Amino acid sequence: MGLLALTDWLDSPASVALMVIASVITVSDNGLAFTAIAEIAGPFWSGRALGTQNTSQLLTAGVAPPLFGGLIGIAGYPAAFAVCALFPLIAMPLVPVDSDPVDQRSG
Amino acid sequence: MVCVSVESISAVRRWSMLVIALSATLCANVFINGAAFLIPTLHTERGLDLARAGLLSSMPSFGMVATLIAWGYIVDRVGERIVLALGSALTAAAAFAAASVHSLVAVGALLLLGGMAAASSNSASGRLVVGWFPPEQRGLVMGIRQTAQPLGVGLGALVIPRLAESHGVSAALLFPAVVCAVSAVVCAVAVIDPPRPPRHEAAEADLANPYRGSSVLWRIHAVSVLLVVPQIVVWTFTLVWLMSDRGWSAASVDESLPDAGRTWWVRDCGRSAPSRWRPLRRWVCWR
Image (cartoon, rainbow over all chains, first blue to last red; front, side, top):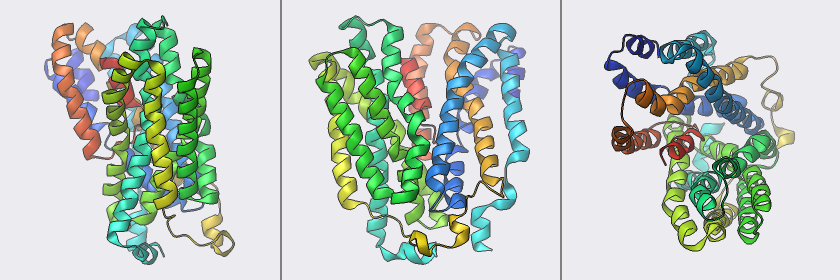
């Protein structure tokens, strides 16, 4: 998303290719989270945990378009893409790598 | 524990659980996303403006948000088979009822109720898959299960607009009603709940609230919310960005988007994309 913001700001044709790449990369994590939640929450809690996961995703999907639409209107596409790039950066340190259910089971 | 007990059914039976989980979720998605394909008919034949037609088509999604966690709680108590069968049956009942009333307010209310019922397949089918497959296969099978949403949207797109055009809105609503009714029967007959100890024999640690004393689940939810934002932004604004910022004409976008759509489709089929609502959004966008 950062590269997309930069190339769009520079008006480079590479931005369209980057958009296609971004559209693929951005979905790659979803099933992983869903599987991990079911494993970590266990058979007596995973129903609620998966429900919470989907509810939060759905609500975010409802809120993000108007907010980013407004941001694009005020600041333009490159700025909105750049703001968008911050979200994965904030997410990175939050990923609970030390509690991987597969690692725990095998080790 | 899990590794031993999943051996209690044959490999064929185990994969059949995946097929059932996939098809139950697919049928629910025909209902949830199918209402969007009624928009042209609602607009041209029933004289509904696009804002109201759009609102009507999003009623199932509103219903879903309201009940996802509640259905999850029921799965935790009574297991996957009852939830999948009951949820599909209630979705079918709401769709049959929606097909039988003429008032659009009543149709909207029934679409909302149907969405509340259709949310049942979400947690239950995910758990069916996680419960019956060993950890090293779960990524793949969950990815296959996740294709239910785009496949449901696709099936709805193939059938519902044509039915609506030739036989009207009511007849078109019979399609999700029938597929959900079939799914309810299949789930009631063929789903085997994944093995788990009875509640009173379960270890204290398994029954304990996993949200207390550990931040792991909260962190996964938070990460997923943060990572879904770029997905939504990309999917929502690509079209308008290509046209207004990159100077693509409507015609060139029109030519390239169906291909992009197929790419998205393959991507959703090939990997683990859970996003239940974005393919719908794209789909609606392109129409």
